[in-house]
Length: 138
Image (cartoon, rainbow, N blue to C red; front, side, top):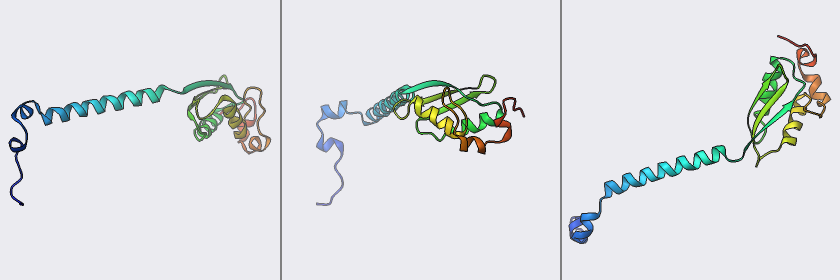
């Protein structure tokens, strides 16, 4: 009853054993799973990302650091980059999780103007003095 385990030959017909290649099948399955994973990752990495440019009242490197750091905590924002010379922040975001208006409001809550929206006065007063002047430099 509890004898030695059966070998393949004892329970499979010869023609099945001839074409049944478990190692080859495992390798094929692994390649298929790897390909499928790569395809899905590349699809989701690109799908849904939008870009927004917002004119801000930022004037110095501290402004750049503050805006980029704080936007990183906003839901749906993938990345942000402020060009200090022009005052324009470029934001890459997931359009399914946020929208341009929410991003502009987030910038105003940090203490900076965003396009036609004015900065939140309380947040503006908390900014360093260099960020409050139009000619702020470090």
